[in-house]
Image (cartoon, rainbow, N blue to C red):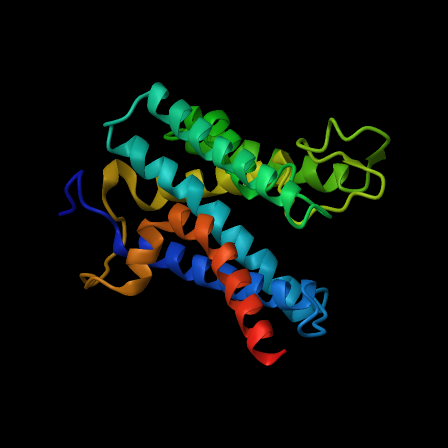
Length: 238
């Protein structure tokens, strides 16, 4: 039996794997961006890896919302404050990328999105049918809007892009809100009442779980660390 204070090792481990995939993807991007290596970031394998990483990361936001709701230990204030905290970290990223590298600075990246998504979707935790239905609608709307271009950047947070948009990180509400809702549906289906509906051996503590439990901290520091290491290696080889 899993207590309300226990964690599901498989969820933490999957999130940890997504974080490691993200670090690998961003390392390749930085090597290409800084001109160290000529890497085709649009190649099918690299593109698919990046999208899969983003999908897992955002899908698990929904699963985590479902799990926290099923414990019945948090209220609306918790989700709103949590969402605002993550969104504000996103604004820190905006300020940092405005300073460097500036070109392609992040306006509405993954942290902006997750912060807002937590606030918007937490009422649907525990409502499987509604979450699944709205997930399909959000994804469909996102694909429809993906081809729309407008003169103003004020709607880009929704998924309506301005012409010639270039940003280093972009996760609009549509279609990605649908992925969070799909995670909520999955969490409600597989872990009703904060209990597994499937058998699984006990998890021993692992590095993946540790990374998964500290995913926000790792996300905030990984890019400066990667860029710092690349600069150091460039200086040593110059």
